[in-house]
Amino acid sequence: MMKKTYLKFIAWFGAFCVLSVILFVCACSGPAAAPPPPIELPAPAVLKFVSYQGLQVDLTLIGGTPSVFKTVVSGKTVVDPATISGADMLDLIEYGPYFFNTFIDNFFAYAINGIQELNIPINELNARCKEDVTFSISSGFLAGQQNVALDFSPFDYNKNGSLADENCSGNTGVFPVCVRLWLGGAPFIAGIFDVAPVYSTDPIIPNTLGKGRFKIYVPEMENTEFLTAYGYEQPDGVVQKDIEYFFQLNPLGGFMTEDIIFTLWNGHSALSQVGPNDTAFKSIRFSTQISDFGGIVLPFGDLGMDYIGQLVQGVDLWGGAVNLSADIFISAEIPDGKIEIIPTCAVASTGVVVDSTLCNEVGGDHVNILPATPPPFIAPLQDSDVALPDGFVGSSPPPNLPACDIYR
Image (cartoon, rainbow, N blue to C red; front, side, top):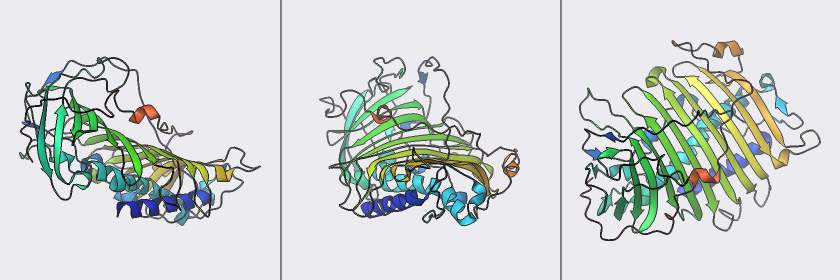
């Protein structure tokens, strides 16, 4: 089922790119601060990986299944939003969450669904261990019994030749906590819990994701090598999430089927939410590149898309921008094959373009949801973003591991 849905998406993506346009993204970073000292954790009693559901933001206000974008943009390097129909702009608005949900539902969820079922004891003596764990039948890739081996000793997650940035304690009782996880003796996850998540049944104590960053390696998933990295931050009870994903799909042999062919698919996306869901400011950003994409009927060549969509929940407005590059667009009028839609304000439910000033002060907090000009697009994925720590691929768990006492 996963493969069928995925191929349908790729076919749609190709058709979209033949006639289409794209959206803006922002990735902001400042100078690296010195790592804080390890923090002792008073509670909770267990350490848990975040579920894939926890790594999402509700985007139903701009959700939907877009159709093929119909506006012909040949000969225009910059497209005036006023010339785009509401239906076509609505396709663009919906494309952001559609792209993200397709990735989450068909790849990311399949790879990690069930990992949140692990309850790892928090103990300063817990440095490495193993356990046979039976995951629920709904856990996709992990379903059934798996031998889980865990090593919490420090390692070079950033691959910069130093352990100072990670600053890991070497056990599960003091944070940050480094973790490497093997399934059935094969390397699967390498990551860091920077801030402890909180899982509480007490309504006074809010659950939080904490803060973490992880890389996952699935060497063969539906004829595809799948690498993904993700980071998230929700360190306290304030309703604020920042989530970032990287992924790389490398079809074995350069194709998914005889009809759908590409040699590499890279993606980088980010989600954020500030405030309670009903009134929150939300944004979705992504950059994606597909190399040598094509098929028996239409060879498209290389494709690239950048998107940003911003909104305030409960207000029927969307602010965003789009960029598209495709070999198929190269012509005398478009020598580099690049097309852009400038920052635009539109009605979220219909796609009708409205005066940009309506997006300047939205909601009770008067948030500006219109992207800046030029849009600060999110950086394309680099191989280093998904590169696993040195020595992890092909490795085996440490020998003679004690039992973890992991429970579900």
